[in-house]
Image (cartoon, rainbow, N blue to C red):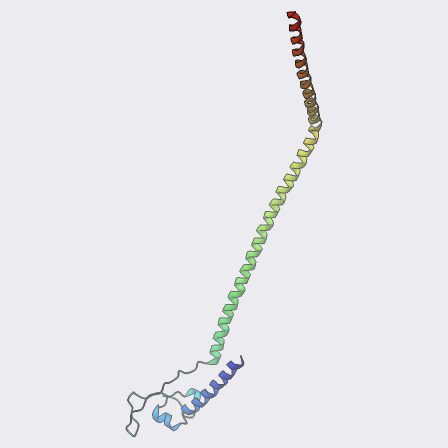
Length: 182
């Protein structure tokens, strides 16, 4: 930052010395470059810009001289500042608009998310209600389920008794046949 300030200061000093050398007070300027039409030789150096004469011009000694490059006039600093502030205002307006749009988008997303959660809440309430109903119905069926379990146990016991009876009857039949043969 300090280097930039030093460079700007040195450029300012060189420009001011160049302006003094190219100013209307210089005797060689008017002879070599001529003077801007309508300019007053008594004005300050910033409003004076040397105009080169036609190419191939000769000075009094008859020697051809080279033309010096003329720098364009510096634009008005106030106009540049105004332009910079206008562009900065447009930039900042764009940034604020983008940020505002982002907040609106986030707000809309939050609203949609809130609605989705409300729907999910309603669904979960319905599921909870249905689960309670199923639990009550199951509790109402529990005595019947207990009776079914008891009947199943009795059927199993009866089946075991039937197998035993079948085995016993087969043994008895075998003994009867044996006795008959005798």
